[in-house]
Amino acid sequence: MGYSRENKRQNNALQTILDGGTPEKRIMVAMEDINEKKERHEQIKKEREEASERSDALKAARTPWFCPECKKVMKKRLDDRMWYLFGHCLDCQIKIENKMRINGTYDEWAYEKVVKNKKAWIKDQKEQIKAFKDQKAPEFWEQFRPDGYSVDKEKWTVDMSMLRKQADEALEHLQKIEDSL
Image (tube, rainbow, N blue to C red; front, top):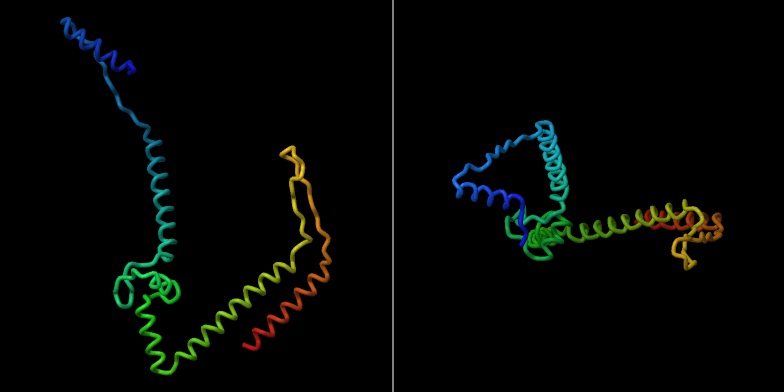
């Protein structure tokens, strides 16, 4: 077990008292830098604000405990899915769809959902094709040598005019599909 200086000082002070003497007096003065303290408080305040902003941003992504419409506990896995899709629990969605079936508007609503999904898929495909069309000839950096640090550049030759032509044809085809919806 280690023997610290403070421990040694205390033992010496006790021995001095036992011998009838007066131990050395120690005066401890605690000081703090006011500017450093203000900077520390400002830094803590800034970190709390940043954490609060992150928490607010993630709050919308969290599933609430209770459905905002029927106030029931949302504990089922399908409740989570319905919350992300429609903003309420599975039971509320079932009630809404049942009312639509009774009113005769369910088939139209379901068809609109399908059309919206198809249009979203077409939009994504168009964006990917445009990005593919605007790319340069591919090149790769690979390490073939066993030295562990040198790399070689591998460049592929591609007929960019043919690539752009095929991309334009694909965009035209997707536009026809979108127009037919």
